[in-house]
Length: 400
Ligand code: ARG
Image (cartoon, rainbow, N blue to C red; front, side):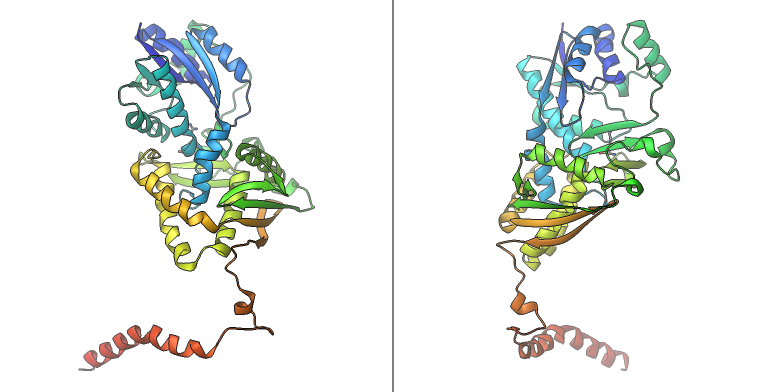
């Protein structure tokens, strides 16, 4: 029998896929669940896959790789899609696809499969990654291709004794990893509908957050966060800790209309407590440590970087080249940022760095001023000369 390795989540869709690929397509299915920081019973998920008919099943803990090799590069690039979305799902998919592909090679499988629909970005991220890294593998997207309605799918599950969630299923569809949690579908499809309390699972309602603000000091080395309040932590541990801390203070809620790559506008709600705090802190430290022209130019790179990640082009020459630029730009982004978390807000209230370009003797209006103000006059003359000349000529020409 041909063999397929499936990116398995443990949910109904990918569970039905296991059986469907076996019954309808004649595949031996090897299921792989990747732990990117969603807290779940992974051993239970593994056993479930086997009980449904997978010939093999395994779980890979990829939290540290995810944080170090995907999240931190994106953080250094301040990668945010459409000014709001920190790209949690978009960063996770290429790593899942890479790991699933590697296992397919190890298992000498013929194909790889995912459980994304035909309407979203995730199918693109999976399939582009596989096409780039594993062109020899056949790709299967059963949900997109099987043409079953939701009811038919549940019927199919029933027929083969696949566990169907018994408790009244939440109308929301979540996708979770270290960098954030997205919620879609159900009432959220109405852009006017305000998310009710059960939508949010990681963040406290800001109104009910503690009255006392929480200060956190985040240590950065070359653009990567390395410590919280002086305690050094691994990348994944740091993000996990900060998610809890900032979520407790209601920080990290995002509500937006987003342009999907496939041309659909969708209403998205996210909870990204650590991402929101780290992006805010990182940008602030760059404000202190990056030379002006580099800082301004980097904004353009950031925009493109975010777009590439969103569009599923993580494994592309341009992303690698941009990463080289970003990495170089971070040589001096070392220091500590102090943020205040309070009732849904995250505000930077202090920063310091051995590479600080802030010079008190230049900035001050008080005693100790070492800035030569007389130099400004000639500078401004030359600075304005081009515009001044143009205006003069325009007037002369118009006045005939
Ligand atoms: N809109 C976001 C993105 O495209 C989140 C997608 C969530 N994915 C999911 N399968 N629910 O990155």
